Length: 211
Image 1 (cartoon, rainbow, N blue to C red):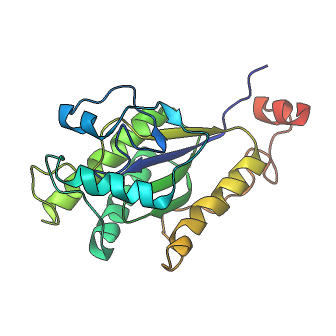
Image 2: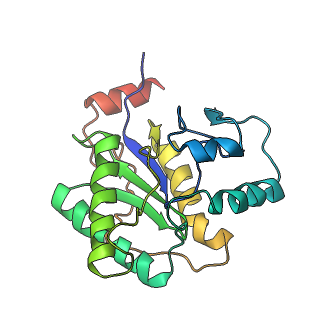
Image 3: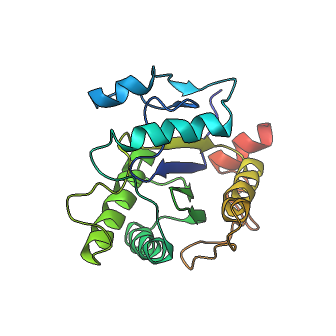
């Protein structure tokens, strides 16, 4: 029996990061920029044996001159702008966001199951944040904000997985010496769909009891 997805962990990177032939592996199936092919072969999926940090740094130093635009790194003003865009989308689309980390080169969000597919959520959040960053003149109109490819989706099917993933997302800023991020659009997780007062006969509750 296939598990019922109750939330999705979505991740994507700023322009120029985690390229298709990243030495760690990637979610890409094709290298669209012919110049980047000189950096190495594409490996779909995360490699079992990961390269050292020096190899990753060397890869991106070599890639810098091959990219059409400069690689982006978000400073505090851009991070705050991205957060405002996310807040607007989450309110307008009625998403329930359980965690969010906006890093200098990538973002993480955990969003409860919704009528929108994960790919549509990513598209809505990317589009709104890209537009607002350019409206506020933080980047030029022609510069891509996000790396193409749609990002990554990790489907979560048990409250325990959500709790564990929230901890991982919240820990991201701390790992690089930044303060914890507290965003007003993040809803504290209440163990949904096994929250207090839940319907024990809901399809989620029945399926999770079976586990």
